Length: 339
Image (cartoon, rainbow, N blue to C red; front, top):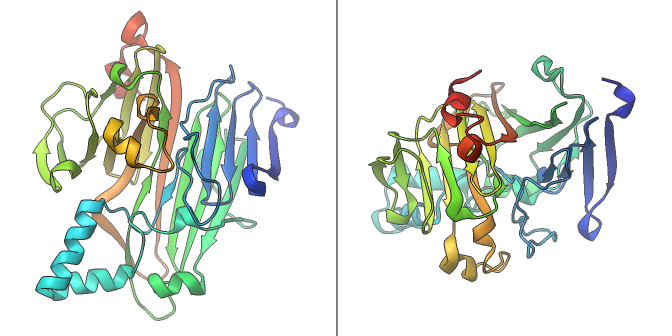
């Protein structure tokens, strides 16, 4: 592959926000905004958009961009559980919950990383595993005085977004504790990936069957998945626990399968707001729930703890292939077991 044909372009996006466009030789592309360190576009060689971004998404700080791949750090918390924790603290004055709430201050439910301006990382760590990914950008987010007021820790949060020669998209995050006071910190993390689908009622998610999950629509109660595959007929908001490294999302109408591969992120969140909740969201179209599905590589149930100087690394890779769900040319179960 000719390196001259690989292109990384720094330019302005919506509302003048800085962004980076990655292009590969086969005309695949990805766009990454420095605001939020957020991927907002991922296109295949045919120019088809593979990620969902709402037509009502706000590209105006400090609001998060609705769609693409928001980075959730240092907190990933469902609203019901978030309110419940505050209730426990206020009314029971539990010392355990008091410590947890103090450590996260007045953080938003999904942290602040998606609401901050990231910088180009001029001194990124080597990533030999990404040697085939020649179109990439390295970003970094570090602590600020503003952040210290709500999360009193020093950190380096690095992100590499790489576009592979066949159009696969790889996100690699490294988080290091740079505290100088000897204190450890605890955090949760997620790649909140919004996949674009043709018709949510014709979508299946495979690879999560028989696993335990927390149902956020039922106060976080724990259940075991009984279905052979996850299908969608109403609102879904579940956190699947101890999940495999590969998950398949099958778009029956488009005859396309997304393969999600992950490392260092044991959980997987599956979310679609459906019609009622969609109408209550200011930055989401009333009927857009039909064309999106969030499947998030995440660490939710058991938070990560780092001592000063320690580093955590997590990765998510996504690719799109012709689906066998209609054509039977590719067995999605074989896809999950391959590699």
